[in-house]
Image (cartoon, rainbow, N blue to C red; front, side):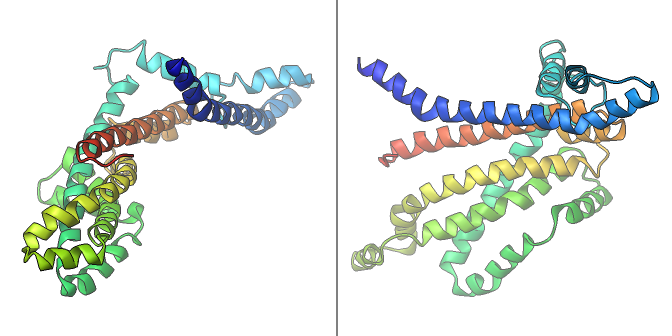
Length: 298
């Protein structure tokens, strides 16, 4: 009975709200697909000097080869063809392209997280760095990534660095910021009375860090890492655009744009969204395990 109650609660709390939103999005999506694709069909009918019934118009708008907005079933069909019906090693496989983007995302996320943690530790322990470094950290995120990404690619290519690393650097550039801000907040979160108690015990800065500041910062770290991993993916996709990459989700978007293949573009977008959700879930699972072992109930 308890298990049945738990399943019912999980269904009501998780599945039902998410499922309702998915159904609403699909209905709205179909509606806009008909609205945006209808002008082309009306124009074609006018050229042929024929008229279309409402049902014929709807059917045609949802079955165009190059629609302005593809219908959900067209995108689902494209995803099925490029995942289940293609070898993962094929350059036409969406899984292959997703893996290429994910590899640079994970490398950039790891680099950005380490850089963010290091900067946060320095900022918290040095008043000079707090005043001098933090404004630059904030200012760095005001520069549009579309403007700075080509410069990073060109500079790194000039020194002989190409392939995965330039994209990872762009991912790291985006992801270090939330980690830095989150960790600064977390490292400063201990109660002042607890810090005074550590001083009373004559604890060193290192002991205070590992026994008080770091455990307090862990929830902030994982929260910021969920944001960081999602924007790392954005950085990796943006990094594939100026390189003229032939592999990766960014490359799929680029080639789809070149040839007017909106169905390919949308399938790549859906793949990116699913990948982002999976990466955030992975960070959340790791957070639950780590915090559970640290005795922090969530």
